[in-house]
Length: 142
Image (cartoon, rainbow, N blue to C red):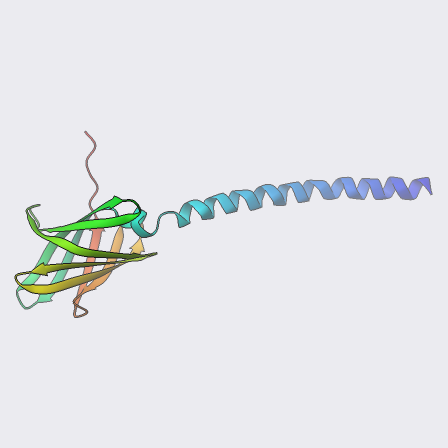
């Protein structure tokens, strides 16, 4: 009977190591996943985005959308390619991987929907008619 308990004890002891390893691995994966999920919504879209919109009736457009985060919501402005402010956004709707900016441009109610492509790029549509591609503007650190 004693030898049975010794065998059982050794087997139980050997099972602790893989279980501990699996627990540590699970925790690391959980932390990494939680960090990756935090970079969505307002956290992801806050900042400057340089967006190209080819083929509009007034030609190819290059706009900079500046989105500022406050209280987990975004406000925004639209700038030309030189950084001159053109319009203020009247509304900014944010979902996990998507933002829609509403503004009035030359008397026309306009909106652009941008969708996260990867950590520094977006794709989208202006007025559901014109494709858009954008890239995060990285501020130079001085």
